Length: 268
Image (tube, rainbow, N blue to C red; front, side, top):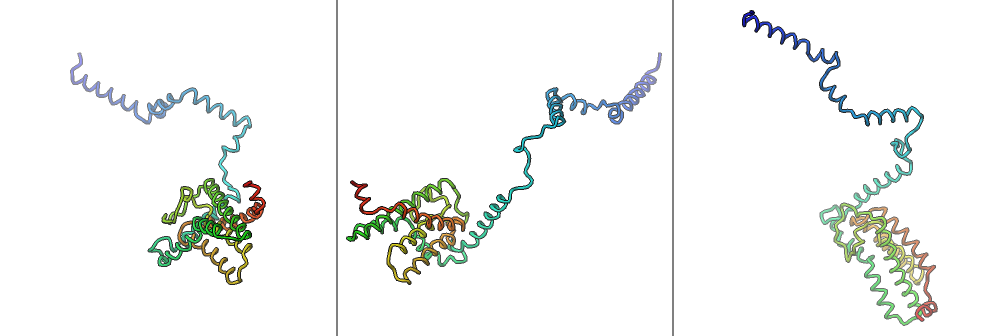
């Protein structure tokens, strides 16, 4: 019978030989790593079949749809529009010198706000209605009536475009405008610019004015558009498109001109 000491030495030798035999290096060489075995076992047959079918589809010559591919070469139009937007935002922020009282030109902010009110729709409509009520001349009433319809058309078209585009006002804008409505939280296009361009063209066409007055009307329209950017109300492109839209709106007003005869026919 072996002694206890001999049995202890024998079991220690067996443990050391077993640990050497099952070392990580040998398990890795034999391909019996427990972690890798679990990872291989976790791969489902469905995934293996999917990978096989995918490789088969690639080898069969089929290509991926065009919309799934990443376009590494954007179009020239997209690059141009992105660059224009970046320049527009940068220039609008640089020109917003009256956005706040502590801005670089904050001391003339009250003057810019006065110009802002002069291009607002409410004073224009109220003044036109008052002049139409006080006028005794048929020719003057015809002109004032069409001016009133033009102002209402301007408000309608600008509201529709703002609701469709939904461009937010500049981040540096301070919302303290005179008599705003829900659609006025949007920036594109500038309603003041459309009204100034259309009103200036209307007055220069239908009123007999001296040369200095005509120059003042043009300067007023330009100052209305400039004040929108200086106060931070609009971006430069909002005002530029507003001037273009207002200029074209006058052509629509002329096409829809309401004469006294047609007005009497409509009324009755």
